[in-house]
Length: 368
Image (cartoon, rainbow, N blue to C red; front, top):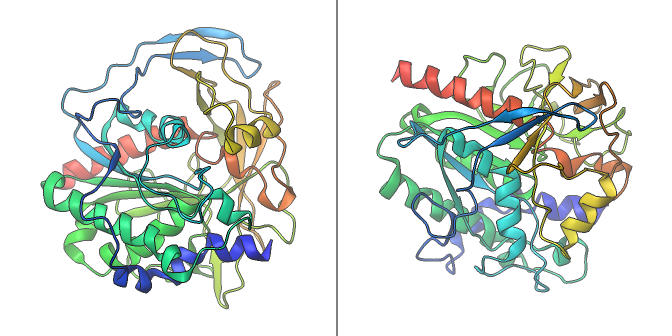
């Protein structure tokens, strides 16, 4: 587990090396981008509403706006099954699947931009191959270059939501720290940042002061320029949890309940695509161990309104603890209890997150 922690946090500690990585791509390879052919983030948004036990309740026909009012910049987690320590720029099936699962639903409201980057692969994470410090710095360098490309060529003063999970969050933390937090003009563009499964730090008892000096935790639906962050567990997190705790003196890991930003417990709404995750991949196998059922629906999506209750735990481990309601599936940790329900972070409250960033974007537009 210590090796896993080091690999997950490598992007943060090597952010400055990333700035020096001379092999960053000169031209962004986009996984998702408006107008891109074969775009995994451009799918039907039609959704079957389901009871917690899977009974069909009706269908929502959702139309994507012709001119979305804001943008989303998404950085995916560790999914690459390439056998090298760092991935290349190929758009493999697992990249397409993770974009569908975690980012495509946000296209109901925003234009989604998602760069391909040379991430540390699953082979590297599992210790099958060893990445050099220079190779570990590629990921941050690639995403930073893509972010600057996006700002230079596509943003045009629009508000933007940053979305990341796991390795994606570990990359976005230094990106916000270096490229957004210190710059007033950049902070003005930030609607919010959804940073899941990546141990965002704040000062103990505070909503700021860990990773960022100015960008605060979101504590109300109408707050903008702020961070939503959590890692999911299905029970009280163990004392040696991989997510939700830190050894940094005077700091703690941020947990914001997307259904109750001000605190307390509330019901959350999972959304899951009908299409199975890329068959035969490592992540597909891990998802099956968690026990996430594929929605038996004819639409692209299945949504179970208010199927779980969630609250942020407090103490040594700060994480989102969920419990099933009215017969909803009970999920199992994978690969062990220290990881909790890491693989469901992005979908377990996706209905709440999409609605939240939609509301924040409306607030941002009224203020700008």
